[in-house]
Length: 225
Image (tube, rainbow, N blue to C red; front, side, top):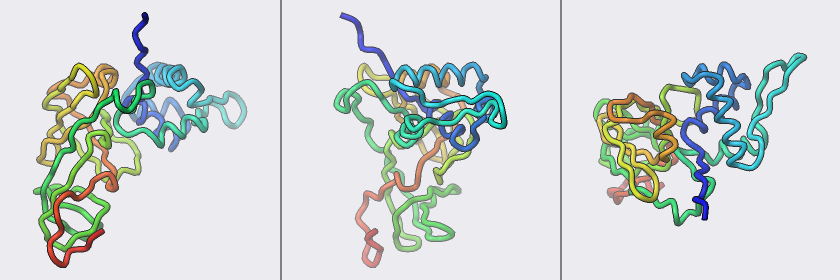
């Protein structure tokens, strides 16, 4: 009996796909992520094997020389990718890490956000100006990268890894000190290896505003959305 093959979409894979969606040039995409081109080629080939089809196609010659564009499958994977996505196991086998609760005060301008000391966490809900709020951040909604890259995520937080907590089954809990808080990202063992994640490693966390939900009860007069 052979062991199940680990087929994972790692945070680095998501970052590479997103970089190619913005600029279909593999060399520039890899340079933006701080990785060699050969490593980018390897990640695309690995994704092809894992997903069962090409995620990117390179055209050579003519006006389109050296352009690497995402295929429909690659675009679909990019839409699914947040943090680490397991393509080979069922939802029940993956397990989930508990959400991280952060507390701050709501501010409505220039956009909805929650003040966390000197930092602001942009959110997708409304509340009363200055109201204390508690928010939940799902570790699976946190994307981890080693450098900044163009993204639609409103929250881009620089931080330092404080711990990498692996479990016998399920994802790895990556604890990161960012925005004056201890945040957690759900990553895979493959992502830990490929990104060389360890205590003291500087990383960048990406969190969409719509992925942050309010968990406390609004005070009287506070909007309910």
